[in-house]
Length: 126
Image (cartoon, rainbow, N blue to C red; front, side):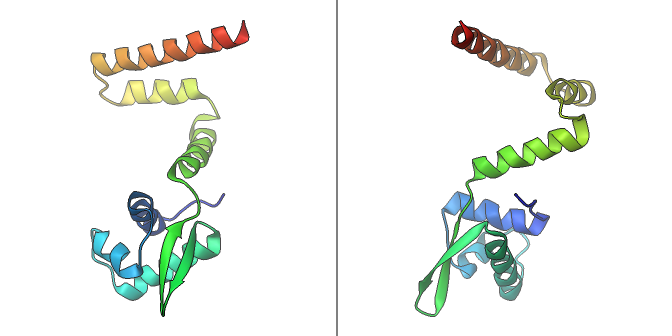
């Protein structure tokens, strides 16, 4: 799966949130109010990359996501993990723990989530 540019990702966020829309609808939801032609061009690029499909509605096209946000997130995180942390979840968690202000409550919540996953895997492997 190809990586999205920042502009492409902003448009995909709108499409994922709305479930689809016309270029004018997408344009209205973007923060920096880009030109209609700019949004239209980026949507067509997304379509060429296989991220977006369309339905013809008269002379206009209604665009919709072809890839779910979850599927893109999964692929993005795999690449991120591989490119920055040598494919090690432990290295990534350690990095954020050392370099970000994670409060005790959040660390305890993460610990509980991890323990829950450990318990599930132990039950599954038994």
